[in-house]
Amino acid sequence: MEKFQESMYKLIVETSTKLPKDVRRAIKAAKEQENAGTRSAMSLATITNNIKMADDNVSPICQDTGLPTFKIKVPVDANQLEMKKAIYEAIALATKDGKLRPNSVDSLTGENSGDNLGGGTPVIKFEQWEKDYIDARLILKGGGCENKNIQYSLPCELEGLGRAGRDLDGIRKCIMHSVYQAQGQGCSAGFIGVGIGGDRSSGYDLAKEQLFRSNDDVNPNEDLRKLEEYVMANANKLGIGTMGFGGETTLLGCKVGVMNRIPASFFVSVAYNCWAFRRLGVNVNPETGEIQDWFYQEGENVDFAEQEKKQAEVEIAASVEATGSSSNQEAITLTAPITEEQIRQLKVGDVVKITGRMYTGRDAIHKYLMDNDAPVDLNGQVIYHCGPVMLKDGEGNWHVKAAGPTTSIREEPYQGDIMKKFGIRAVIGKGGMGPKTLAALKDHGGVYLNAIGGAAQYYAECVKSVDGVDLMNFGIPEAMWHLQVEGFTAVVTMDSHGNSLHEDVEKSSLEKLAQFKEPVFK
Ligand SMILES: O=C(O)C[C@H](O)C(=O)O
Ligand code: SF4
Image (cartoon, rainbow, N blue to C red; front, top):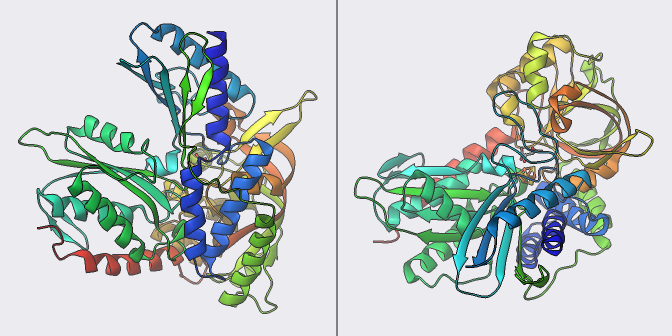
């Protein structure tokens, strides 16, 4: 079992730090399609740069390493209890080594277990089979994309598309709608797994099961093959684009599975996975516990090479130029404390580079700040919606191992009030925020900055030092980290003049969705 534990550790580290070949190819194809000089092209360049950095640093591609979920097929005589124990050990070790973020939170007390164990985590599903080897697969699916999963109960009415009935065409409408409703919040461009039929839980299981298929396979069911091809050919016409910035690529993969249902129920379940599609698998020898083979590794490997970094800079510059974001055609540098006057000069589309101090704050902090004083003076400051992966060295100093943005919309009920209460001038996150925050930005003089979701290595490198931490009782991802950053790039997507790129893209993509209203599969 010692060897098996070692093999599971390797599987976890590889899954968290190296994207599989099929996913890399899909991202490369998207990048080639995107128009140069756009915000989407800039995001994709940052994403591929980030993939390369994760390869080199052997560090998490994205800071959110999800709810680790193992699917394991075992020969009949393999000891599943022993295997489970070995996986727990491997998970705890990978967490200690900074390859996984401590992500297991008590749902009632909010306490983080610190080692990714406890209360049903990680998820391990065993199945027996007649073969003589162990097939162990792992998916690390983050929370932002998980929150964009959706389940439809047919028949139903869908915005933009009208009635979806209990047939293939109704299913088609649900899938198109699922891509639309995700907007950029699940770090598009994404991959979807779709489950047709079952009940609410088995339908979602089936949808997630599809995410274990190779992105390049062809569905053996003729109807589903046509459906997958239709979705791939049309979803990108929604124009949501990378990060929801608008653009050519919104969807990178679509896999559909079917199972029987009961007469009264007809579910279409969609599992949305971000571009940071971390799933891998190994073939393990049940006698020795050693890895005999890796899955998803056939075909061309895309090694996003050194030039990615330079290209990311070129794309940032091109994007600045194309949007004419500033008078001197350079990214705008922001350093806290920021004045109201400075903030009011910023407009949607501006590319900014932040240098100096920022404070992380996400779900627990926002709730806390509503009723309590802030542990630091936040006047003129920048709040970063981020739950980083942190490691402490021998001398007790903290280091950032991964630090991309988290989905901001969860803070919508609090954000505007908190900005006003403490004088905060800028919030950074991803996916955009709603009307309440937009109104507060106008009223108070604030700005929302969209960072590139999933680019956790890129942003970790922008952090030059960790100067302190407050509210550690909330656990590592939820604490308030004091970060000193340099050249932290983000795009103004909501400004103090009432403009929101997110609102615009949502509106235009809804109009585009309506072109798919007419029946296709009769
Ligand atoms: O929890 C996080 O760090 C991010 C999350 O995966 C998200 O997409 O919002
Ligand atoms: S931050 Fe984005 S890339 Fe990372 S897990 Fe969440 S949805 Fe995925």
